[in-house]
Image (cartoon, rainbow over all chains, first blue to last red; front, side, top):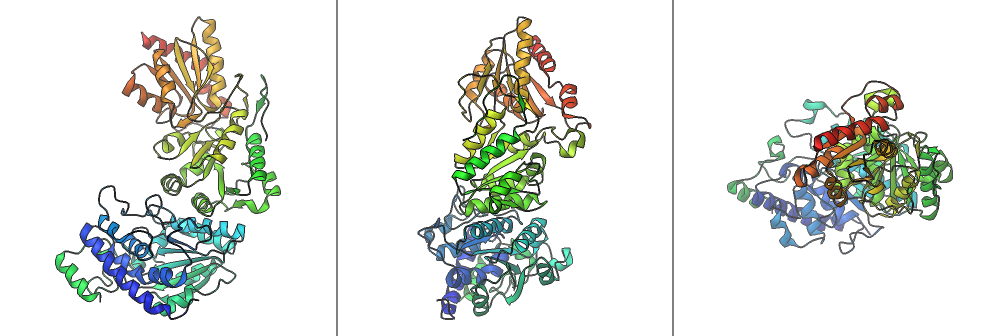
Length: 271
Length: 318
């Protein structure tokens, strides 16, 4: 059963995932490390504390689904899938190389464990809604989790999905919003404000919770809680670049890449 | 299993056979579901909704989530038929069609209803004449435009059994059954409607019967026109195109734009492999308000208009 005993494992995996993701981005000299790092603890909690899956059977019909709607954060997704056993570690060094299976945005036809091809923002949440509807139709037991960025919530297609899920009372659907308050150029609230995000989702018929997106214990409790009667929105308050001092809360690390000095510095901090 | 008995003279709105076929398929396979954007009536899915209330998923006026939900339903083991007016399913949700359906290669059947200029009087926003051009470049997406009721039923059945993304471009414009003996639906293969050797008329969808009538007009003038039904736009039957080019001149006809659709595809092929004169019959761009019939007449989508294009092609053949 899912208990706080899982927390040390989640913590250890999150650290491995951060080191791995940063190494991938440094090697490729491409990536989205800021957004990788704000999402890392959420992914570690899902894969090592919450979800029911089998890396040897990625098509198992009753598997819990995770949709990475913020598809640019492949440093986070690929390190999570690798840690979970979906593919071997030596694939990681091919990140962004020509014809690599580990390309910049995830492709379900390349990698097991990828539920849908994301990249253009606002796509994963509608797809996750469809997965949840399929589950509701068949009375399946699987749960569907989808992670969006917060800047991503500016895309209108998310709100179509929010409306459909609320209307259909998709209690088997959990949306997690990586609320790091930054987007590509600047802060979300100075670009096109999202607040009050919680009130918006409640108005659409969702149960809404807020959590510290880097607190594994709190994340574990919330994400593994039994479904209610409505779809669930978890606003995870996070720090972009969390875990590496010079990245934390700096917008330019959205798609910044570390030089050798920065890489060494980060590896010293990630212990 | 429903099928339309071919008649020489009856004109049919092919939406009736689309719905009957879908219902028969759904009866046999519980995985089949329909997804609509408030378009229950225009997709003629009212009886489907009555028979299978849980399996008609209406997301309201929201095409992007409609197509995304289609992808998600496929992930969840359903076989979704996502049905909406083709102008909106291809226009509003084009990125979803590209990324969630074609690129992700989900087993989703997109059904574009009332395509072409079915909504003639409503104006250009409701005309769907760009869909071929928008969809042709999308890898993995099979694009089929049935020419009559029989072919509509066959295409729906084929789509249900095919593993992969499909776009079925349906019409509400009444069309006669093509009078072709021993028909067999073969996606990716053109169908010969009329034999001929002086030139080839390549038509699709609602224009095929008009092309056949044009061939009859030309025959009276001593011109032998081959007529081909290209019901699969993607992938194109290059073998039939090769043979068509050997006749020395080609006319293409479509209820769509002359830019980038079937005519564009044929011109791409001939210019690369067998340069011959190609006359493209279709719509030039945004169209004025008018009935479907008026628009067809005005822009040469008629037996006389197609015959005139054939004569132009023959002059260029030299």
